[in-house]
Image (cartoon, rainbow, N blue to C red; front, side):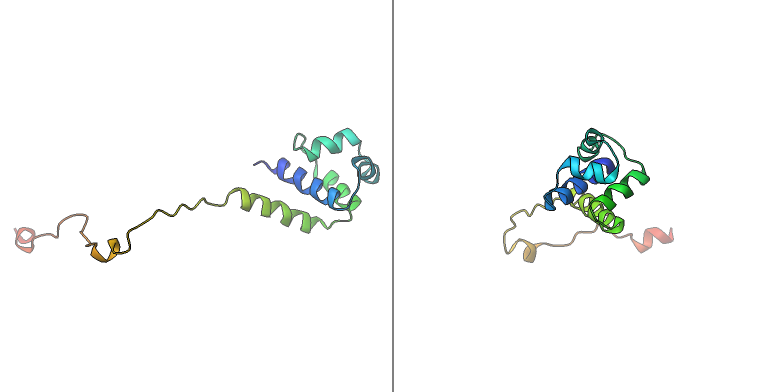
Length: 110
């Protein structure tokens, strides 16, 4: 996932949660509707100044928006855990074998 994709998804989610149109938010942020659409789709990199004006237009704090983006990255990077079936007594019968045999003290002295 790219930053611009996470930013766009976060902006779109907030806009839709508010029930607002692209045109409404674009007008409030003083950007063109097609440009805002491209940002929301993750196709355009927005400058920090533009991000701030869009966040203001959405009545959203910039830090809240950044936390949302961070959460999206964390979710995208979450490790996949696969649990394999193991017989219940398999671990009880397991013996620990050293990776290499212990050194013979008599050989070490030689």
